[in-house]
Image (cartoon, rainbow, N blue to C red; front, side):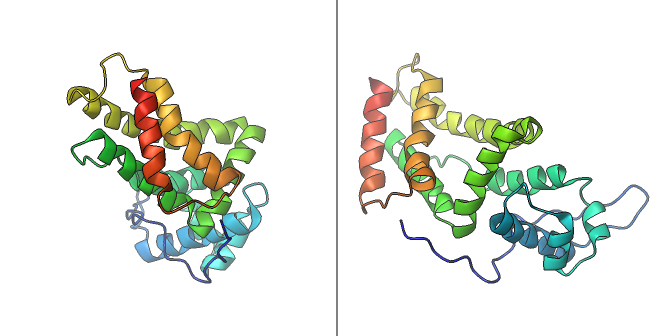
Length: 211
């Protein structure tokens, strides 16, 4: 899959960060929060988590470092908050009325996310850094992985309710299969996909779920 150059000025992360009020203080400006969020993702993609500094994020956002600390207490808190806002809020299994439609919609959403230039650089870096930082891994697992997995499980439960899958379907294995092959192809080995790849993968997954 060819690498697309990162845009010069990507839009703010999906889902506007809500206005926040410090205890006894003023409401934090949404525009500043959005600028910091956009700068954070640009800087994270450029340098990786280990070398990411709040000073660099502040410079890129055109804000003072104090503006970051009014919103997040640390680099870890900032990373988990902003990454989870994008990864979790943007996810959710579409109810198409059929298992095949739901799986295809899920895969399409995942493929779209993994093919974004910033995401393609950020996600593998965070996973690798999580292997070196148990604190980061635990925080991201709780905020992102577990929440996304719980949402994906709804897809299976709907299929069981419609009689498309048996009640004793191996849910844990099915969830691993649902996310694993596409992530491996797009985020790890960066292999180009044919136009019908998601359709063919959907059919293989349905056969595996019912096996």
